[in-house]
Image (cartoon, rainbow, N blue to C red; front, side):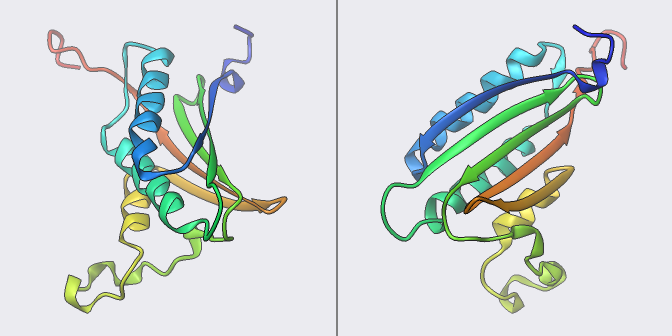
Length: 155
């Protein structure tokens, strides 16, 4: 490793047809990545729920015809102890960070339809960002991870 560990990144990439059925493959890919970065790190399970919500939204809504291919890039920045899962697709332009989610405090029966999955993804991630580049949607979810706590020392 170099002396500037804050910028040291480990990453893996998966390109797959984005179907609901392929979520299991994507989940396994993300889980394996998490295991590879360090056995003594902890990523809350709800971060996988956030990834699932984004992936399923892409699967169901990004394309109106033809195959829906998604590139998934997992990266880990050592110095920041932060994982990033990036979703890249060439579907319909959609920026979930601009979705009005102010109705989250309303009872379910009074809410506008849609957006609940995006709200879940935002709440279960530390940060979400979106940009559109060369007719591609690029959505990133970030999560700070911690060292596993030892049952012996009560850390």
